[in-house]
Image (cartoon, rainbow, N blue to C red; front, side, top):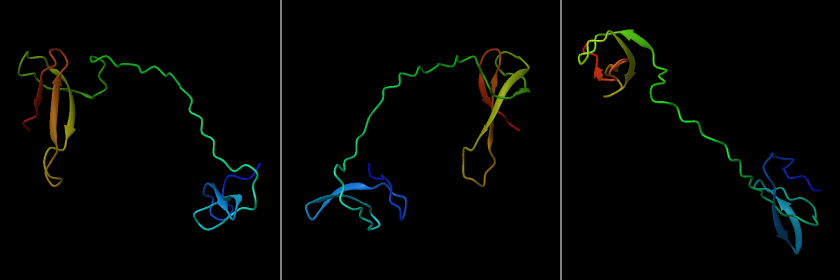
Amino acid sequence: MATMFCPKCGSLLKPKTDKKKKVLACSCGYTSKDVESAEIKESVSNNDKKVSVVDEDHNVLPETEAKCPECGNDKAYYWTQQMRAGDEPETKFLKCKKCKHTWRDSN
């Protein structure tokens, strides 16, 4: 079996007909000698992998002490997000652990 990669640049060699001969050619200009069967075969396998759905209550955000304006709970998750131009500070968002209310930090 002929080598599938170019010895000059390492690219994949593709089958080509050159002067009524089948050869393997590369985009860099390299051409192999006469090859009996120069063809590329492709196989696709069907891997049925199951996707696990993460429960909405499973939260990986960090926690902080902040009073919820809706229910008064003192624990909340928080994250920051760039809302405006890059030279503006990030906005801090909080989400109550108890009632799931989301608000912006006013600090």
